[in-house]
Image 1 (cartoon, helix red, strand yellow):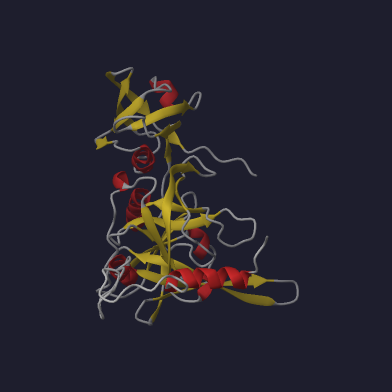
Image 2 (cartoon, helix red, strand yellow; image 1 turned 30 degrees about the horizontal axis):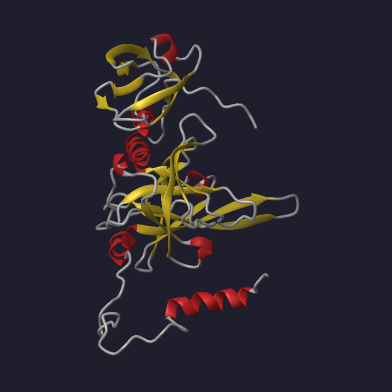
Length: 336
């Protein structure tokens, strides 16, 4: 038998408030002393991260046959530098004619794009404000499926909001060779783009970027750009304004045991193939960078230049091996 939404809500409230439950005897251990919080929740994590999560306001000029329209948009962003650097999604600021950032203290500041990277859907903004609180960063190698995470941002422009979920999957491939996502069931809605996915210590795990949905709203399939990729791209954009993408030509996933990146596929004729890398190899070092996690390969290749020669250390059938590879430019993706 189906229930109306009102009945379901009433049942939920009753369970939360203890309505209909047997009364506890005076003096029993189930009593909560006045002034004592029964559940602290994740307030300390939110308090640590909230000052670093901002709102990004954009305006676009759209020219029509009859008149020109000014279309406004809203997204979220994350402070990554005390001197005014902010990371957000590229799609949130693409072709914007005006940008402004709303800080948690209620002030608004004009903003400019320092650099953008469409392939990773990241952009670095700058506002002329000092003394901001940059968000603390998590170690991506410590993030695991099942970890509790919180999504922070400004969904639908209603103001800073926090939703809770877990890490549902890691290294979920996106539509381009360089995108690796953290999947979460924390509610992510329009306006959350560019906001923070944090752990229970208030540290940045990823930048919320996209959802899969039939309705247009959250259905528990949200995706965030991992913090290590965010760090790498932001650092390159700060110094160069753009990312010159190198390509190795491998697909990886975590190995069954230990650290490294297990190669599951090699692009025929690509740099890895020419260097002798094969499926089943476990990459443990790329140049001077240790590879502890499958997502590390994306980050270290991203920081390299096309045509650069790099050494790759890997394990094949239990034995250490090495190879030299010359990276290539990232192939152009076919039109959908």
